[in-house]
Length: 139
Image 1 (cartoon, helix red, strand yellow):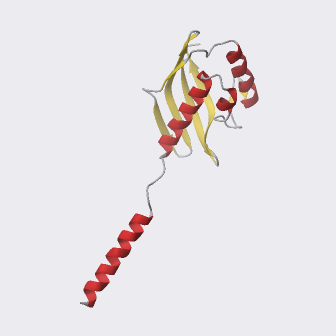
Image 2 (cartoon, rainbow, N blue to C red):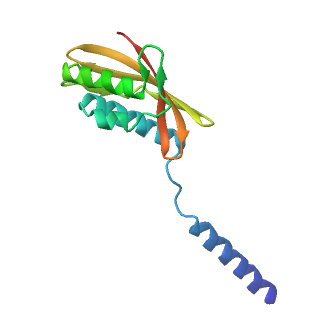
Image 3 (tube, rainbow, N blue to C red):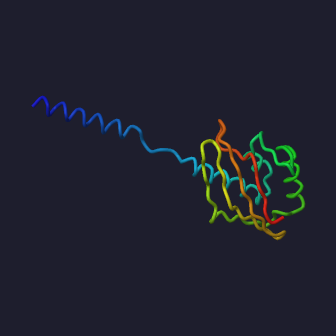
């Protein structure tokens, strides 16, 4: 009889501990995909601050420069209307996470000015995943 009570208590504790862990948060792949979506929608919504919130302070591109230069370039493009009435197509995008680095490709952006395909590289930072590099095709 005692053995049955001990087994019942152990099982009850196991179930309680298992239930206490609760649901898991989003995966890194989901977080990366969400960041790519936030970047793209802010870009097409002419929201330069929203775009910059997704960019790491470590961002650098040989043809653009650093984060501040990117902000200036995006602001000028927005002022010129390049993203007006734009659309984002993330349907075929794939997020690949390898350690603290991730890529998202392809992201297709289109507007009256034409369409381009983006690839993003993100790094995991204390505040989440941030874009450190972008590759642009179709310009």
